[in-house]
Picture (cartoon, rainbow, N blue to C red):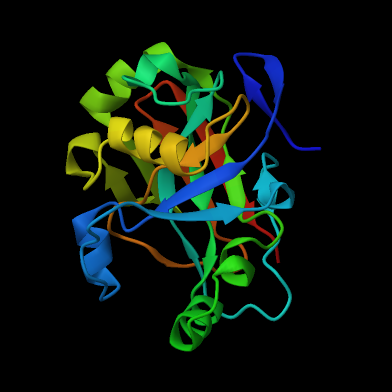
Length: 214
């Protein structure tokens, strides 16, 4: 079973939803068109990681970091009118992606599961309560790689705002207590190597440090 920490309380994780191409600049840097509707994919619970060390999968040659705001769903929501109806907390996380495997799958019209769902491919910090979203909207989230800032995300730059993402997920899949939602990454993604240190920050409220194992 997979668990996260919400203000010191252990919460069991249900589904892990992820949104792709939700920042126009990121879609452009990968040569993708701006989507007309949210691009949704899943990661298995076995991908969840809260430990400070990350081991890349065997055979991987091009794993990229993607820093994201992550939402925790607090209760079932059939059609949430606003974000407060569904969200219990938020965190900052990494949607790790083996880019070569992803491109191979895309070229063949196959799912991205192997590229997105390997063990430790869904890294998250501790979660803070949903009231923190006001500060996140004001200050955003960031990631420093080996001491240098590589990504800074602001919610106003999302193609689809949080409320739209939640309504889409609720309508198409259902939202339930314990679901996580990775809401998309801004531009600045790049490859990881052994020894890299990633420092994530969510509006100065919660942080996390992940080191890539040798």
